[in-house]
View 1 (cartoon, rainbow, N blue to C red):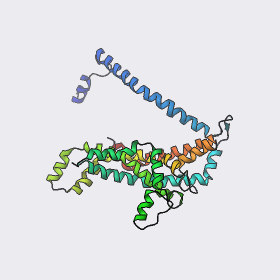
View 2 (cartoon, helix red, strand yellow):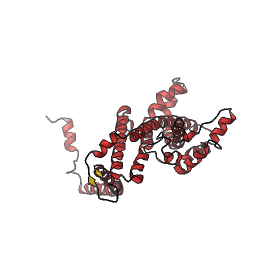
View 3 (spheres, rainbow, N blue to C red):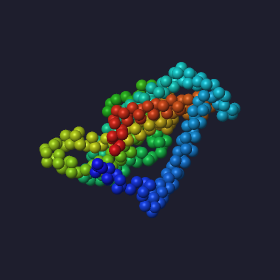
View 4 (cartoon, helix red, strand yellow):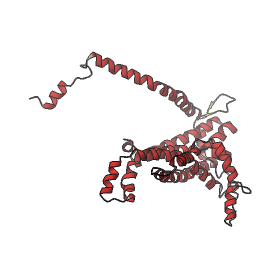
Length: 313
């Protein structure tokens, strides 16, 4: 006896039984889709795939640009294990990321919540908060160099007004890293705020109306509705922020040059030094692979913890 499900399957036209005109339309759409993604795929292959393969190959060589690469096996990676400066750079980068990412995300979410209300002049506030994101990092760092100047800077002028003695921010091993972290937090708020604001404006209002009818307070609505609904945006902001923090370079290069006593050196800064100051390209490629592996691990870990597959649906 033939079941209803079998009858439906037999009646439904498969790929081979579809009308010729429909099959032609499907092929045309498939070709159009391939043509539209081809530039992005080609760009990724040329500017990401080939450099990645070259970095992997060169990491097993001794290469100084002037002479041909010489295969040395795992020597660069063995040197990395015993490199105290690079280990310090990994630690500094982790500390920088640990403080800048969650603090900036929290501040950005708070500002987005405020700007999502009927606030007078909110367009001006949005623009003012986002401007540091699109301002050249070197220009931002130069402004903060003046702010942190121990003699005429704004930071110590404010502390002096309050009756406190300000430190030599960027030349102190105790204060240089906190000073760099503050710059990273300040500059990173704008983009995170914009993403959160866009996510907040797309949330369904009927859920909040139902929660209000049920007597839920604003605080209860925030923790029970807003935060869960912002999960995809939070996942995206966190992953991109971690990647950006691990790739931080400009602030350190301008503000401290990795000092004092390597207290602010970062992984990207050490890669830059190895490649373009010491011309140890093979060693720099090995450092780059370590950075790539750390970013991949952190992204997969965050995806596992936060349920990235479910969050992005």
